[in-house]
Structures are given as C-alpha cells and as structure tokens.
Image 1 (spheres, rainbow, N blue to C red):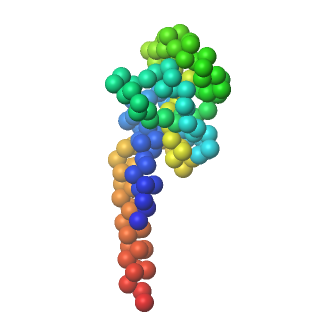
Image 2: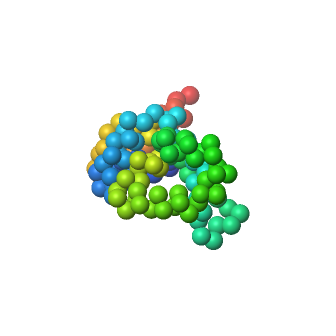
Image 3: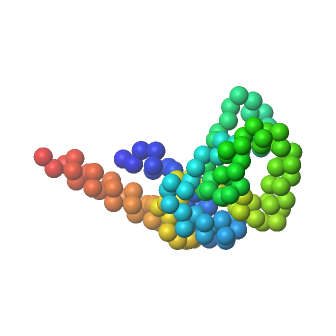
Length: 142
C-alpha cells in the first residue's frame, strides 16, 4: 500500500531515544525539512567503502557548511582525502561528526520529535493497520 515509503524509516530510528547518536544530531533531524537532506556525492571520494570498487551508495546528510563546501570541491576533496579523513575521524571521536555530516534521509522532514523506539514501532503498526482497513473498505465498496 505504501510502496517504498513504507520501509524508508532508517532516519526515523536515528531520532529514537535509544539511538546512539548525539542529541545534537537528533535535534538536527527534528528541525530539518525534507529538502535539507541532500546527496553527499563527495563522501565516497574521501571515505570509500573497502571492497566497494565500482559500487557506491551515495549517502544523504543534512546540509552543513562542511558538506556544502566539499560537495562543490570534489576534485580537491580527493586530493585532500587523508586530511579530511583525519578531520572526520577526530570529529567522530569527539562525538561531533554530526556537525560535519549529520547523516539523514529526506524522511527527516516528517519527524517532529524524538520518541522511544517502541513508540515509533507502535505508531507504524497503527498507521499500517489504518491504511489496510481503509484499503479494505474501498475494495469492498461497489
């Protein structure tokens, strides 16, 4: 019934109380609009996945000055790969990776509060049941 949108919930669970990301990252997700989550093409230039030659998933992240700068300077990012990796690693160790790259999908625009994971699952089930009942009613109505 909901198509791909029905399973596009990774960002929702990033903004769960139990998620191990910093509260600042969660608050960035809550404050975001859908269009704030952009493809970070340059990420694979500086942080390639091991063994992923020829195959790259382009992550999405909320816009930051870091993302905006390096997205426009991909050639330079490749040349500065080692330095940028060190900067990213230091930020991650300090619990502030989200200040550079707050990973999140476009579904951030629909998230308005940080909730416990159990509440998120309960809401998903309730919404799915409501959608299925609605579809069933429309299918059985001549």
